[in-house]
Length: 509
Image 1: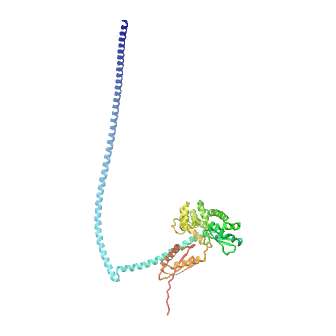
Image 2 (image 1 turned 180 degrees about the vertical axis):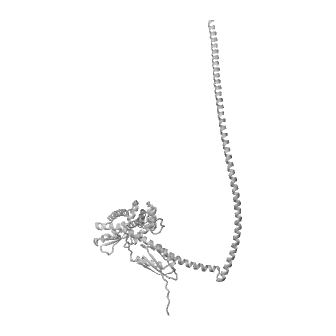
Image 3 (image 1 turned 120 degrees about the horizontal axis):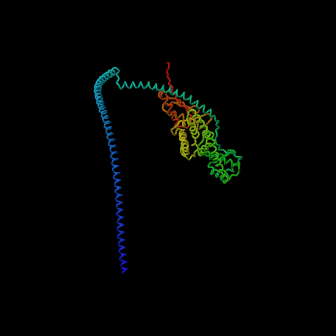
């Protein structure tokens, strides 16, 4: 019984506890909800106040913007009003000007009508006067014009010829004075002693026996030598000497040195020949390189590519009219430098143009083209200054000369080749050149005779006076000189003198 009471009591106590916990939890939940509602109301109240504040600021800003816009609109209206007034004033001025122009145009039209009437009257008077003049002179207007033009042309041609001769004489006199001074000064300052060097192609022998050793059994030695050196060896009746023939001066020099060394050594057989020729080829290459460097040093030229200097060194074994080409290049370089200094041109470019102008003569014969164009292309390939390249290409007028330095290089080349003792020419070539010069001059119309004098430095042309007048004779001299430049090769320059003589002959009976 007690146990049951205890259990019932425990159950009641448990129920009371649960009910009390539930009520406590509900109280706490209600309290939390109430706190949350209070916080929400506080937040809403703050947001409402902030919204009212922002709204008031926005209204204030909008009021300011409206006031500024109204002020700007008022100012724009004021400016528009002033511009409208100015345009109205301008329009009224233009209207008044248009009225004045219209009045002036009407006045001009009236004047033009009066002028036209007067011109018609004058034209009528002129026609009547012309008709009267034609009746008096018995010539038509065209015939009178022809006679007048013929007389004026004759008088003008005479005056033109006289003025042309006067100007030409003055220019020639002044130019010759200046040119003589420059050339004389340049030649005196260079004053190089020229020695005509011709590479020898004759090899002396110690005795006649050596010829047989050079030829060898069945000609094997001479064949081996010719094949290794690329030359022709001529063994003839010349006592104690053999001749080496080759168009390439460098190969000829290698062969000459190799054959001289073989004759001194005495060991002449194919294997030894090939070794000696190879050694002498290397030796001549060194000589060529040293000659090019020494020539550049003598000409005081720096900065050239080694291949350019090596090609210049090949000119040591090249001659033209008996003049050594490398010595000629150095001389031309010095002359060009002096002329450039006197004329105020670029000295370095002038010197390089003079030094390299004949480099194309050192090129291999298998390359097609003139020596001027070949030399220009070669120097351009190795970075030579374009003005120098033009001076090389144009020193024989195969290209247009683009600078004063190119003209100076050509002049220096002519001075070096034309000075006495610089060059020589064989008799056959000399006679052929003189004959060609006379035939060229006589090929022009009106030429009666032509004579080449002063070793071909001057050609005197005698013309028929009934075919050639004074003005035409001057033009003829210029045409002959131009044709000589285009068709002939000659050292220096050639003077062309045209002689016109009028003779009056009568007989006393």
